[in-house]
Length: 255
Image 1 (tube, rainbow, N blue to C red):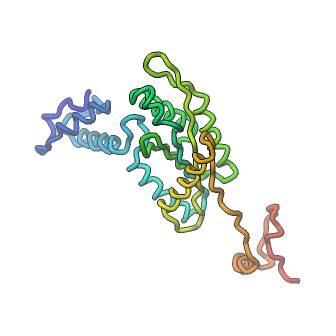
Image 2: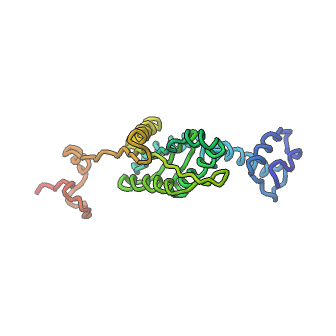
């Protein structure tokens, strides 16, 4: 059943024609076993509109609205839980040249192709969004700094290898520049500051020649003697301490 089917039967005198037309145009199906005008039918319409409002029409990725909501949640989670999280910003290199040479229809094909590459390179838990004309953002929760560069390079390499078929049978090769930054764990930061740090690295990747990745790696945290004392002040000789390979960080109990 198309989204517009059963529109006159909507209960309560609601004017849903425009909403249903939008859902039909977007290809959002309402399950055929739902009675038009019922509460379940209205819920399906609302769910469809919510999904439609959070997606980029060209690529099907999350849009800027969804990205901003997700990054706000993630920066808060990192502050509370302390797990590492990486934000990557990717920009298609020389995209204006693609539009000027091959037309905007070819540019749209290139954007969709890059979007598919990005989505193929991440986990189900990661969020990929189109946040500008040829700019994308990827939020990777629980991504340790040791893996950040490898993830960014895998994305960059996959895009660079893909041939994009455009109208007329031509094939294009495009590249992306990627900048990234880790959210500071246990720190009440902000989404705008996190994004700004990643954007600075993207600018650096562009200025250093494009088709490269630049990451703002988190500093190595050094625990002072005073902080060690506070951390382990509650330990007594009866408290077991499991070997961790970092025994030199654990203060010895005075004899």
